[in-house]
Amino acid sequence: MQLFRFFILLVCVATLTQSCSLKARIKRADKKYQAGEYYTAGELYKRVYGQIPGNEKQLRARVAFSQGECYSLTSKNSRAEQAYANALRNAYPDSIVFLKYAQVLHRQGKYADALKYYKLCQHKDSTGRLVQNGIEACQNVANWRSQPTRHIVRRADLFNARATDNFSPAFLNQDGDVLLFTSS
Image 1 (cartoon, one colour):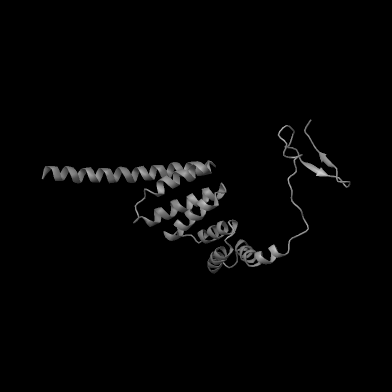
Image 2: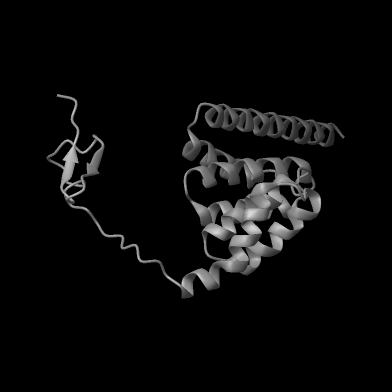
């Protein structure tokens, strides 16, 4: 009987320690996010997300959404896509998750899926200009690709040279000559 009580006490202490530890790690990730250390915060959220019990859907959704925000801000779109999908699966309460997920899908070229989530977001907030622009872009992307513009984009080695002052603005004059403005 004594051994059974000790075992129950040990399980209770381990459960309390783990939950406090999770909250402390989430708080640490939140601080990193607020400090602008998005990559570090995203990795912390990723580690914590795997340790949150499956029955705590609300906490899992919040951590997944925060992880998606971090990865989205650091241009890790495939990771952001997965994190936002986890937030949706765990029923994140704010409808902004539909917009964020659609934007990540859009950036990855998954226009049909992005359009689906833009429309879901539109049902929640039909006045949002970002949603309207996203829907229009997803619907017109095939047309835009079939009619390219006359603009040519190419690498400008003059601006990308390591041994020069490439931090200054540069402009072309009417003759097409490059005008560099330096601080000296």
